[in-house]
Image (cartoon, rainbow, N blue to C red; front, side):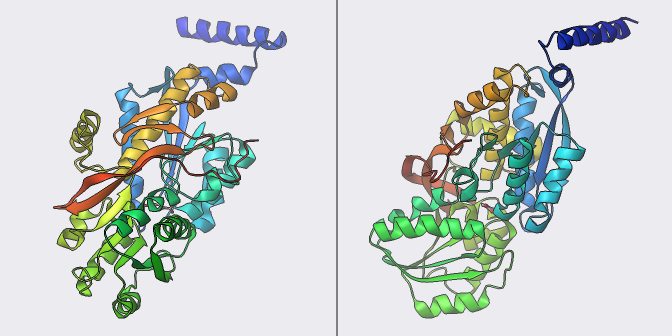
Length: 395
Ligand code: PHB
């Protein structure tokens, strides 16, 4: 009885307010219903483990705050994007039109991200990117409703070139999957390596998610560079690390990479990964209470070690919490929501970071080395590094 009366009197208030033009009915509905949060992530294929780690991280951050956003409960939705760019628009549309999500958290693969990006720009849905570093999303095609909590693909590699030259490696081969992320990562590497005085003797590539590395490794052996730098991730990274060692290159030509190479793969890669140096906005061994607590809690909850993807998911949750708190759960108050998200400082396990004007993290990049299945910090390779955000004009 009581609840029915409450509903009736509430709707009477809505009609009254709407007729005076003070309050739109959909705003009242939005505030009283659950917040609809949609994951569009890879749960199959070479990036499957990355998707799981991201979802774990998001859920962990929200659980720490009682699973509420600005006082409202949450309803979860989920789509496996398979890291398949051709299905990107269709999958994102499903979450937005069918499931009517208030926020779409996704994704990992840069090509799929471009599909989400089109849907986000067309519909205005809030999109938090928990990984994909594709430059366009926070450069020329940046948008007020799109925020990234991870990195731009060039951020790690912009810090890589100098670290390699400092170690005396003047001639390098670059190798990657040929798609947006590999191309963007190369842009950062080329700039930093050549500026530091290095020469790129050859740029090698193969289509995503191909893992037939043999012919390319033979070519590297013949070229005899001082070092190799690369972008690979997930299941493909495990295979590359193992094949590199099996080809006898591990002890002859030092292997470097954008840090994804050694994220979430160290158990599977085993000793073949020892000694690989990478640059990344996170390191397992960051000696801060924040990171230590995060790692302990994550391992307890999910029975696995966290990696950079788990951290990025966790930070996506923190960003959403901050935004929702600022508008007291009324995510339809977009101007105030975006302002709060833009001005957020995220107290991350990776260290505190802020949001750039183009909605990408401004963050420290660490130089790491793999030792005994851990990414150990060697030092800070770049302090408070921002992506240039070239061509970004918020509409
Ligand atoms: C990307 O496609 O942007 C991407 C995928 C996996 C990574 C990093 C970047 O680990």
